[in-house]
Amino acid sequence: MNTQISQELFSKAQNFIPGGVNSPVRAFKAVGGKPIFIQSAKGAYLFDEDGNRYIELINSWGPMILGHAHELIESAIWGAVKTSPSFGAPTRREVEIAELICHIVPSIEKVRMVNSGTEACMSAIRAARGYTGRAKIIKFEGCYHGHADSFLIAAGSGAITMGSPDSPGVTTGTALDTLTAPYNDLQAVQNLVDANKNQIACIILEPVAGNMGLVTPAPDFLSGLRQLCNREGIVLIFDEVMTGFRLALGGVQELYGVTPDMTTLGKIIGGGMPVGAYGGKREIMDCISPVGKVYQAGTLSGNPVAMAAGLAMLRHLQANPQIYKQLETISYKITQGIRGSIEKLGLGYTLNQIGSMFTLFFTNQTVTNFESAKTSDTALFGKYFQAMLKRGVYLAPSQFESLFLSTALSDDDIKQIIWANEESLKEILS
Image (cartoon, rainbow, N blue to C red; front, side):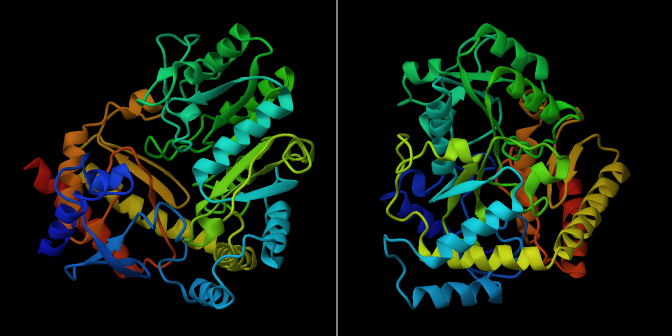
């Protein structure tokens, strides 16, 4: 496979962009080699600058649920661009998409549009702090909520230990207000709450985790968190930036029947355009300026192009609920094929899957949290990634990411993925 142009672009990019990329995972450091520079995409395929075609299993980290360059979304975007790509003033579409989100998502009575998942999550915890008058938050090891200071905290030693900064530039003072617990460990959360009585403003988590690889919640984990937050007056925040409108129309909270106090959204509600949103109970959201005193603002919030794309996407998903069954079928075929190859080759690897998201972990341990995910053989995954890329299948360039499927995948694409998986496993183990 010739990737000369991509390599030349990467060399040039390193002179002007830190690491040559605008988001760290794109640098391929976790899988070796140099990143592929994409020229275009259509349906289930990416096309790089050298003319190579890849079957796409990332879908821009989730939003391309209908595949790339879908005619419905393209039409909405072009229609909006003609009226100007930005106003910095209210528009009809902001009201329409807000009404639709409030109608669909169980926890949301009011919603505020922002520009990214990071912005949504940092704004949600600020609102929770303003609403409760408390300073501390609890997050979970391996859950990613963007790069705001409060979220870049590693666990201390022991369940009750304060966090410590996980990135230069994050102050110790910020870290002291962030407590961490292992995902799926309800007792650890209770211990943190008991040790910090009446100090916890909110608990934030990915209700289905996608940033330590795909990890699903234990049977009573989400309902247990809901009960704990009810008892202690803590705001429960579901980060559904990845899972919202993907695992079900109403997200994980619809799927599992557990309603948080607040929800953060992104990805699909922009139809591929940069977007985020946070929403929840009316009394919490009314703490936000200009109604309340919690300040949050953004010139490009509710951008007309993003709103047009998102509105077209959400209306289509709402009108076509069979899409979720179609995605389940595609996911089942692919994951069953991969499991078949694993068994045939006598391997003990773990495959976690829910709906149109899945991760193959190169470990024989059951993966239920970040510690068990970290038992994966990341070097072997890197070889697997390169072997799959060579066979025309583009995966997330990290063991600790979920894959995202789209309705654009055909039966022939599915067969190609299953074949590439088995041949790649044979290659790296030979």
